[in-house]
Length: 143
Image (cartoon, rainbow, N blue to C red):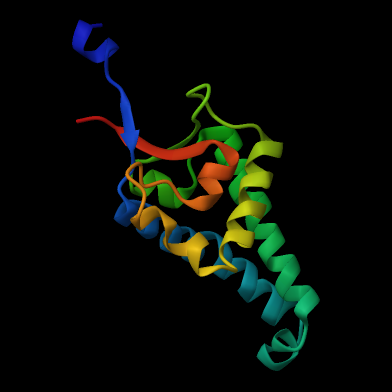
């Protein structure tokens, strides 16, 4: 292995790549969950819209599936499509399942505030609130 390949570092992934990865994950992971809940488990969209428990369970299942992807591969399908990885900022390695679930909970809670959604645009390191709270970061290989 060349010296250059050994010194290759990761950099924080661009915000646009992280947004694209999120949208891809919503379509690949969340949409099938919502479809199955709406038309297989329940009796259609009206019943789904009136069941907050089902909506919460769908979001929880999405979080667990993403956490499993992050734990096993450091990438969800969306992250893989954008060639980014999720790492622990302290160790530089993949995160544990508990850490990934905690990160998802922080992501959901950060989404309730405007600050949680836009903080990455005002920070030099471009980290989101849930990344700051959990010491994680979406990174890509340095070119």
